[in-house]
Length: 335
Image 1 (spheres, rainbow, N blue to C red):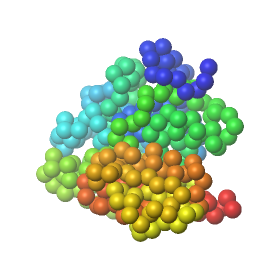
Image 2: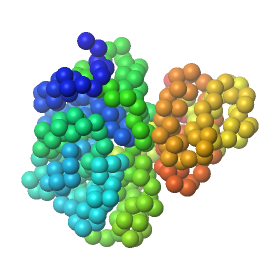
Image 3: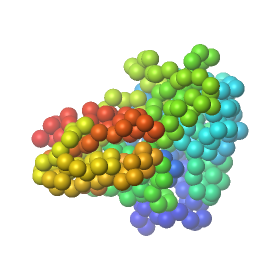
């Protein structure tokens, strides 16, 4: 039986059994595919870090079937309840103080006193699976650490197999539930103290929408050296080919990625347009899949046209900056 299987009652049962046995399962959310493990099982949590090659100071997000389950492991305040009511299930992660009896293994929060939690939008059958785990399912993106995030089951499969001829030892199953509609990771907000809430990661919910619910501005991350949530690494989300940001043209040995207007990039060996309509929401959903397609062609580099900072443009530019920081050194090291 191949590792990648379509989502069905039978494969969901197999996934639940694998998770209870401490194995890992890749599954679709509205954002990207996650590499899931039982949050209360120390061995499963350790296997996530091992399988991804993820630094152990980089915390994991715990996923739950509903708000009550998520808030049973942390200490929510009025702001957390307001944001959960507005955006869950959906692409918002909240960082909150852990309860003293929190069942989630401390490695998942990198030994910190906080825990990142969210209620994702998943297929109905997967909610039943999530409900069977009191500590939820911890799940970073289902890809080798630092590489492009997967928005399809095929991305998961090729991403891990590109690192080795064999599937990762503890990855039991990839549940294929089609492409992820948002295509961009969750927005992460830190509510761990009573002061001004902090935006730790731009994501699939715009900063302005969150601020409208809170009635106050989100502060930027003031201590990036301390990783309290995923997505804070300077080098992240990287393809193999170097990215050239804010390019105005492309050469024949380059691939090109543009927001909406391909003018000036006609010479590129391959071209991806994120949104012909100029929609940042549409562009966000297309970003990682487009980068996967271009990178698979093996270009010398990928010329990336400017992306506006409106709407989800801030999140798209965040991913591109981190990808550019991560891709070029890797290509140089590979010779």
